[in-house]
Length: 258
Image (tube, rainbow, N blue to C red; front, side, top):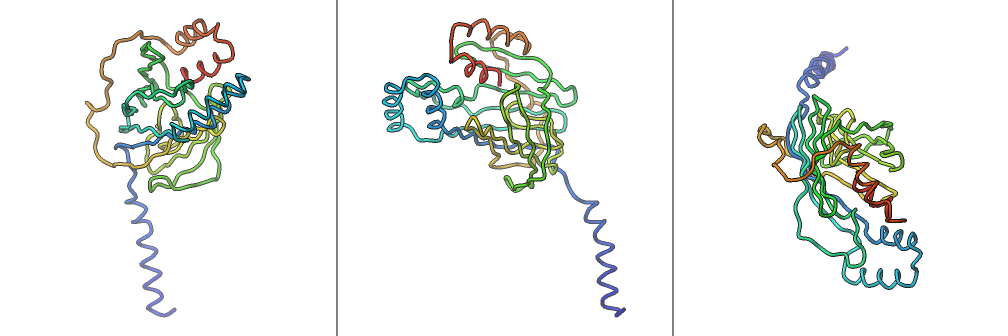
């Protein structure tokens, strides 16, 4: 073997484990998410559900004249390797006319204690405020071999059912070594940077990740008035309140509990 080739092979052999040794994984920082809702698709489903073809068509045409197809909302997730805090960005109240779409709102502020496996969610349901203190939602993910790049991170796809009927597609990265994500989506071996609810026409995708230290004081909920309940107690409250809502009850209940 020529001396030159021997030196090249020796350098590769030495440098490869050194590079692996210094691979850096993010354990704290801030993620900005963008939620996109296809309002036209959701309204068409509402019209089909209500069977009000004539009225529904006229109302939908009026909505299209005054509103874009996609509504975009922003939120941030601050995290370290012990806690995460998901906070929606406040926006001016906008009326959807006849179509009041709970999917186009962001009513959950979510504090997760990753060490204890608990969550505290400040949740607004119509005019009522609740603080839901319970365990972090357990999701039975099925990890696939599909990959995509989100916000500069290599992410792997996982699928699951939430609340027995909501099909969820998530993309997580193990380059961020924290098992968190937007809203109440978590439980994968890394940070979730993308979520899609294909049958519900909604997505959350990270637009930026800032790898900076997060002070403990930034991972706390601001005090808020409202009733403190468990998930089971909120479930019972909503079931009772919505029992006379007919065909609209299931959709309202789903997004209130999401």
